[in-house]
Amino acid sequence: AVGIDIDRIYKIALGISTVCVCLAGAMMTPFFYISPTVGLSFTLTAFVVVVLGGLGNLKGALIGGFIIGVVESFGEILMPEAALKQVATFTIFTLILLFRPTGLFGTKLT
Image (cartoon, rainbow, N blue to C red; front, top):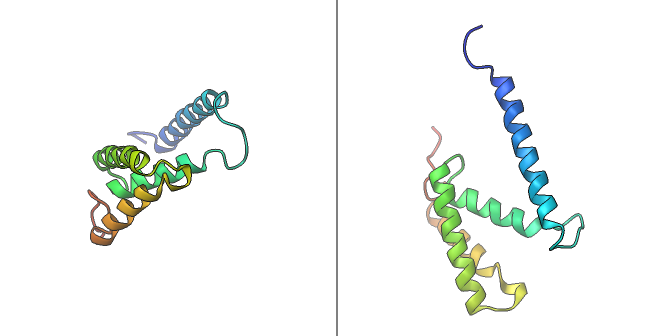
């Protein structure tokens, strides 16, 4: 067979992503307590960024990340309580998905 070995590429990508997650977790432990739900807020924010930009679209994810970063910054200024921190984020997320169900740069599958 000639060409790129897809299984090998998947394994390499999985290995690199696993190393990145392990390094990020190791660097977070001095600043955050360790529990099964410690990364939930980060996971929710990452999910919102990816869906907001459009699944499978790198440019959309970058712009979605920028939008969510700005919204969270202003949300923290306007609503300083920790419990209300993500209200602005999910409000913007819901409004954008109401008008653009595929995200900002997503495309419909035919």
